[in-house]
Image 1: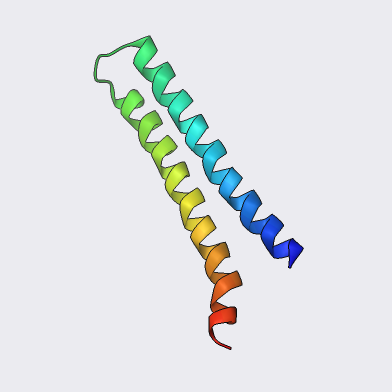
Image 2 (image 1 turned 60 degrees about the horizontal axis):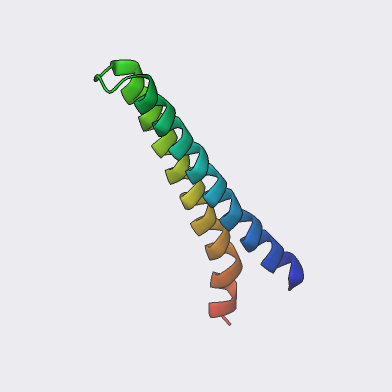
Length: 72
């Protein structure tokens, strides 16, 4: 249905947006200093975790929409 298509499209766009924000965080951290710092590591790790969660959410939405179709 069109609602399912819209949901899948929205979730995929969400993954791209979160990835862009993660890249921005990494660029800012690297711009501030190339030294290793615990807070820089935390910022980068949290950005990566956000990307992981958005991908996990996309997989979950896909599974909820597709698995019932395969069970028919």
